Length: 275
Image (cartoon, rainbow, N blue to C red):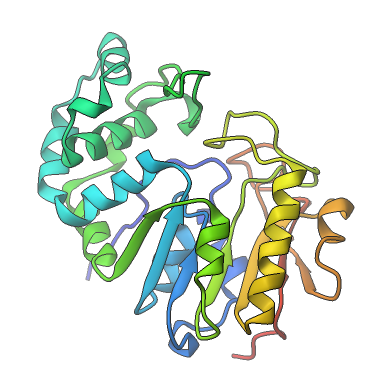
């Protein structure tokens, strides 16, 4: 039987190639009594790997959430638009400069998927006007996406709720029966991520502090959570008393390149998972 492929996006900093090292520290999906909640969805690698029975998936980037909404509801339409989009550099810039407000949901989803697969290194960066402005990267990685790939993703998304939101709102609505997995934007080994090459917006140390405060509130409600983040001392001191596990294999400071000294950790507010 052919294995389903859920890898739909190129996402620098994504956890696709680190799954084996992450999932072993997460509770088995059957032990999650309510929802699997992910406030920084990105490429969704952990969600697709765990396949929880219920989930709330969120991200601050509305174009990303529209992509998943389009794939969930209109997979065939998204595929038809995606495969008809231009195959040239000139065509890429025409698609990049489209007025998104004039597109329907399948059109917006197909455009986002197209730009992600054909832009330079899968970056997601916006200019001061809020418009996507990454240069052309070529067509080589576009056709990794197939109709069957899109249909598999669509099927998996049918049982989830999708939300374009800041992480605080998502964390606040969690109950004690939910499980939170968080993969905020961070620079491995660094204090903050202040450039916009690999994130929708900057994620500063002030954001890390805001996230830590939100997670303290979740812990008081009895919510279990696990988070991948930087090993920088200033980040770790925001989580005193929490279990910290070093990721021996991670992306490090060169996105897409695995290294044995990644500068990344998993922080958990629960004891080691027994399997």
